[in-house]
Amino acid sequence: MADISIGVLAVQGDFHAHIKMLQTLPGVNALEVRTQQDLESVDGLVLPGGESTTIIKLLTISGLGQAIIQRAQQGMPVYGTCAGLILLAKQVNERPDQPTLNLMDICAARNAFGRQVDSFETDLVVDTADGSIPVRGVFIRAPFVAHYEPAVKVLATYRDRVVAVQQGRLLATAFHPELTTNNAIHQYFVGMVRRSVEQV
Ligand code: GLN
Image (cartoon, rainbow, N blue to C red):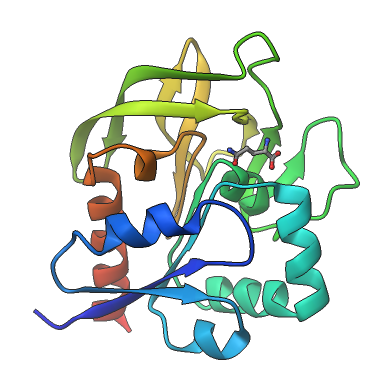
C-alpha cells in the first residue's frame, strides 16, 4: 500500500496532537502545513481546533485559505475538528460576518454548549460509511451544527445536537478525537484520503 501524505494546518491551535495521532497510522506521512508550498505536497488536510477567528485571519493574509478552498474544490479531503468545523461551515450562527472557508453546507453555532459546560467529555457513536465507531467525545468550547443542507450526512449527535457531519470528501467533528487515545476517526479520514487518491 503506497504511503499517503496528510497535512495538518499548523498556523494556530492544537495541530501537534493531530500530527501525533496521524503518525500512529501505518502508511501515513503527517506534515505540518504553513504555506501554499506545504499544501501542494499533501493528499488530505486536517483543520485543527483553536480559535477560528484567528486562524481565518492568518489564512486570509497569507493566501493559504484561498489555496485550501481551491484544493478542496478539486476534491482534496478535509477534516475539521472544533474550530476546523467552524472554518468549513458556509455560515456561522449569530456572526454572519465571520469569514470562513465556506466549503460545507452547514451553519455552525460557536461556543454553543454555554459557559457552564465550557468543556466536557462524553461517549458517542459516530456512524460512518465504514461502520459505527464508538469514541470518547472531548468537547472544548465546542460548536455544533445548527443547520445543514440535505447533501450533508449527520454522523453523530449529542443530546439532539449535531456534532459530526460529512459532505462528500469533507468531514467535521465538534469534538477532538486527537486528544484521546482512539485513532479510529483519523483512520476513517485516512480511508477517505486513500479512496480519493485512488480515484484520481
Ligand atoms: N470556540 C473556538 C472557536 O470559536 C473553538 C474551540 C476549539 O477549537 N477548541 O474558534
